[in-house]
Amino acid sequence: MSFEHKSVMLGEVLTALDVKPNGIYLDGTLGGGGHARAIGERLNAQGLLIGIDRDDDAICAADERLSGLMCNVKTVRGNFSELDAILEYLGVNKIDGAIFDLGVSSHQIDTAERGFSYTKDSPLDMRMDRRNGLTARDVVDSYDEDRLTKIFREYGEERFAKRAAAAIVQARKISPIETTGELVKLIEQNVPRTKNGGHPAKRIFQAIRIEVNDELDILHGAMIKAVDRLKIGGRLAVITFHSLEDRIIKETFKTLAQDCICPKNFPVCVCNHHAAIKILGRAQTPSIDEINLNSRAKSAKLRVVEKISDVS
Image 1 (cartoon, rainbow, N blue to C red):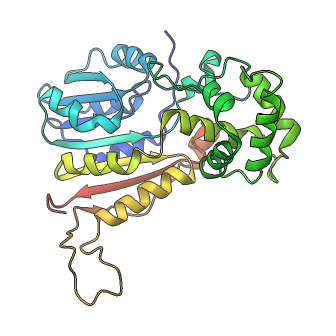
Image 2: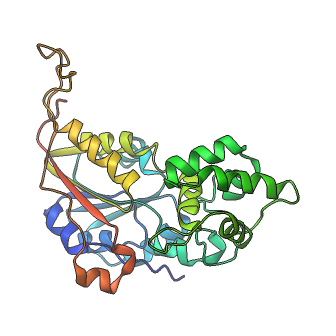
């Protein structure tokens, strides 16, 4: 099996996590195992590396890539929103660090039959976990116009969301939309290109993918769980690739780093909230050299926090 995925900001992630040789580290979005492999190479025989991914291809590829490491390795097929249950299953209470590299992997985009790419004609699928029932075709062929408009506008930030939704609903009255090629052609006919020349299908495909995989709704809760599972001094690194993900991560970290979250007009604090983390600097972005080598890294942002308290 070939599972190609270039690990974004690998050096920055390793610096951020400050890996302890005998520590316990989690990769919540295992992918091809690039970040995990680099972390594992810094662990000794007492160290533990845990990898989670909902994609069966990713688990198979990572199991191969992580073989031969000195440390203990546990990979689990699952969703990082299930973090608590997964760690309990593995008998792990606290961890020293975690990395979440969000979004779709290069392998998923480049594998035509997965249906993630608007440049390859294939059945409409877009499931990261192929055990799930909802597919991109279900969204395109069954959601009503208002619901399609909502996800295109909210998840794709698409200016012409209503126009795209109306065109889809009208077209499927004649015949179902079954392939990415059919959907792309329909979008090209009804949605103008962006000012920077981006393909009109890019935002629509992003929105459908997020809907199919419930990518945004799970983020806030998953980050709280990850912080809760960190040891004091442990670090969490998160890489995002679009503004919707980054906004959720930024706001979640901001709340967790505050001592008081009462409304500003309250004269005294009544929330009894205490900072659980400190934010380590501003969001980092890839170097020009990395972007030149991997254009998909261009929109990446890395945010890092450190656990300072178990009371929040």
